[in-house]
Length: 216
Image 1 (cartoon, helix red, strand yellow):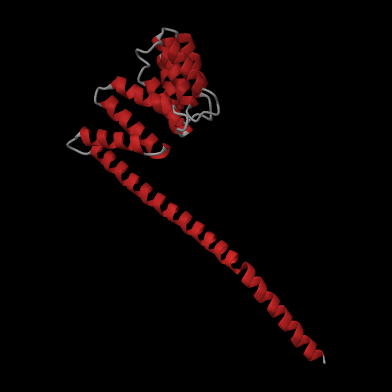
Image 2 (spheres, one colour):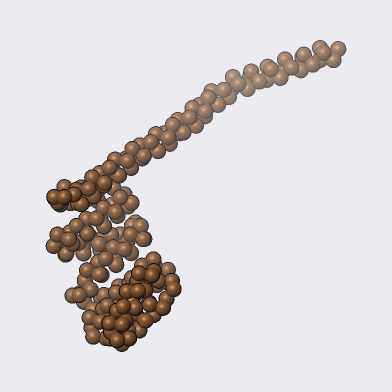
């Protein structure tokens, strides 16, 4: 008798399963298809992004090669960097901006270079490391002739310990003091840099040499 009841119970369960499948099977299949479609769309977007990144990398390297090739022809490099800046997201855009500004400065177009560095330094979505480097390069190229108050203010903003370029900014502040004839201030800064173990060795040595030159 127990076998009969077991068979009846199994048939009832099978019938309920068939009814449930009939009622909800379409929804289950649709849900599965949605999941598969979403997964496929995500993978496709990832693939497209990889393809786009590879193309950008190739174009960036082509522009860099044009900028450093001998004999030098800066026009293709300038055009390549400008196109990447106009089309790319922050990563390659920022790198191309640094390269473009360096090339502009090297070829005698300093005002354009300063504008390029400053755009990168002030862009809200720039990589902070590259933005601060752009700010520092802009100030470096104005150190001999730029407005002292502006230079001092912007250098001070880069001299916070958390800034990766704070030691270079501090060194530039000392050079600005030398330009203004503030020898004692420059000596103090160079002395501090030359004894700071957190400062890169090359910069410490340079600070020590400049301190000796000033008679410190």
